[in-house]
Amino acid sequence: PMPLPPPPPPQTGRLARFLLQRAHANPTIAVTLQWYLRSELDDPSFSSRARILLTELARSFERTPIGEALRRQAYLVSALRSIAKDLKMSKTKAARATDRLREILVDPSGSGSGIRNLKVPLPLDPKVMLTGIVPNECLCFKSAMLPMRLSFRFDPRAVDWADMAGHDVFGEEGGR
View (cartoon, rainbow, N blue to C red):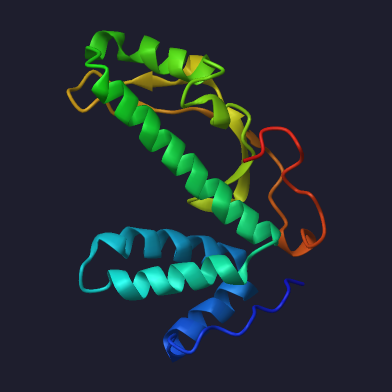
């Protein structure tokens, strides 16, 4: 069973407390809630409440496998955003973009080095554990926006979140 969350700060309302309780009862809800709240950070009418709840979500999962999963997912998205920015800033033509993407992913000092062997639950389905990216299967489509198709390795066994308390589910390799 997952540990009980610490009590939320007084500025959170009943809905926020309800969502945090549900997130602690179900890791899929925790992951989905994190990504929903992150998407709302750009909305001026809701961003301050989203930020409070996102902060509380992170605080309530500190030092737990779910908290580590949420941190790793945020890192993965940040690294992919950085790679996309590198590609666009390099003024690489679409025809050469796939080669450049693969170079970034295999370069040990590049912005893609941290995700090559990163173990992280898939943000869209946290029962699937990604175990790294496959650079030679990644590509950029021929377009001015340089959209990427990324190929990941994954563990074929479903993640059992109920059995994770007290286990090092992410291992030493590829950790962030």
